[in-house]
Amino acid sequence: MRTLTYQTELCVVGGGMSGLCCAIAAARHGRKVVLVQDRPVLGGNASGEIRMWIGGAHGKDNREGGICEEIFLENFYQNPALKYPLWDSVLYEKAKAEENLTLLLSTSCLDATMDGDRIVSIKAWQSNAETFHVISAAYFADCSGDSILAPLSGAHYRYGRESKADFNERIPPDVADQKTMGMSCLFQIRETDHPVTFTPPAWAYTYETDEDLPYKDHDKTNNFWWIELGGEWDCIHDTDRCRDELLKICYGVWDHMKNRGDHGVDNWELEWIGFLPGKRESRRYVGKYTVTQNDVEAEGRFDDIVAYAGWSMDDHFPEGFYYTKGHPTIYHPAPQPWGLPLRCMISENIENLVFAGRNISVTHAALSSSRVMATCAILGQALGTAVAQALEEGCRVEDVDIRRLQQTLMEDDCYIPWHQRALPALTLQAACSAETVRNGIDRGEENCWVGNKGDVIEYTLEKDTPIHGIRLIFDNNMNRKYHNMPCCYPLVEKRFKLPDTLIREYRIEGIDTAGNVHTLHVKDNHLRFVRHQVDWQVKTVRFIPLATHGCEQFRLFDFEIQ
Image (spheres, rainbow, N blue to C red):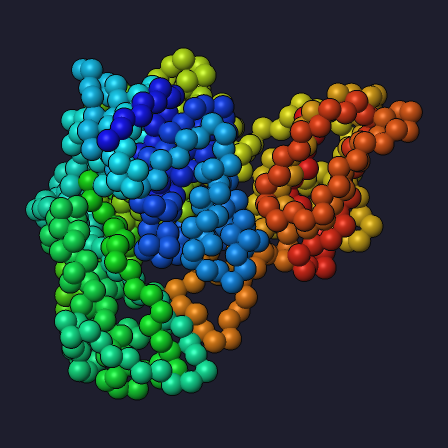
């Protein structure tokens, strides 16, 4: 056995979407980060091991931006057939591309060393390398979902459902309990051009008729999320027990669809079944503030808002698959969007412990809306950015300049409802031929410049002026209806691809008073948010769109000079 030690600024535990985005954000803002992930791949519930598509806020123009959307678009670019092993590779690539980020895969956190109310270090075990890793850090971000650092550090946490009276909420039961939403093992199917037989394993359950299934959903395109268990058990320690039962149900449901009645799947085959359950709920930290159902319904207009949600309060019954009284969840309405504060990601009793993902400080009722992965991803980016700023400012995370943090997040293409991004002084000083691209709002049809072939956007300054940066936000079709990854593969697939509204090729020119021209020419853009660093002394800066990924018009939300 060997032991490796690390001295870093931020240690992120958990490599789901929240942990990945947290680690990348902090690294991009100049901080040394170690990301500890207990699985061989990143993405958590979105990974190729579990295969849940990424959901987020409902509502027009509410799609999550930032690193989450960057990953989506990179996947459409590299992985047009949407194969899960390639999706895992895209996530891996994003982590490995950051020089400030050290990635430890297949590494499980197993101990923490404390100094009073501070975590000094954690110890983790990497089984495939037979190596212990001891990581000391200024801050520890628990993005593990199950909040592994809570029992190791003594951090306060909740488990189960509060009572109605605890927070004066309407959704919870009258009496608090230890029940949660359950977990699911998903399976995926593929259509062929010929009939395919299926023989279930002998240990699978048998469902002879539709009446034998508590929830009679045979929709191939709805990912069988309702095959769910564990809410009445312990969603951490009973994970293997849940998996064993879920596999029996999954094979039984597919056997029912294939062999026991006409369900339109004669030519379909079982391609993959998950052996790692995807979890919805377990431990939730107690933070500086606990978000409740009432906060959700009041739109979460917090002074320290740094992220948002917009999924319904989708409260699954703890019985899961064995709930027999109707639909297995209740979709309580929630505003689209509603805000989440920085305070709900900071431990109330461990000084240097922060968290992002489904384990933030929320009640069970609020969790039912904040738990989906795109929401978790932007929470992670907000937290990583906040920790980086706290380290720069030499203060606690809760004491950062919140207005500066909000502006930084919006500059990084993280939308914050009810806030407008401040523009660089140079952008405001120059004359501009298209005011729409400098209004500080990067979404919404009314804020999108639309041009045709030959159209140019131009900034003109009074004299030759130093230009160091150019910021662009392209139209990525915020209201597209398809997911980042599929749940089944039909024979004739709609080929998911980059949004046709994205500008693929463009040129930027900087022209000085002597007529000298500096040129940037990008031929294969596939991102929404692009920054260019330049070193120009010019009077005029022009954006010249040349081609899109299919759209006839050129569409642009932001073009700024700094």
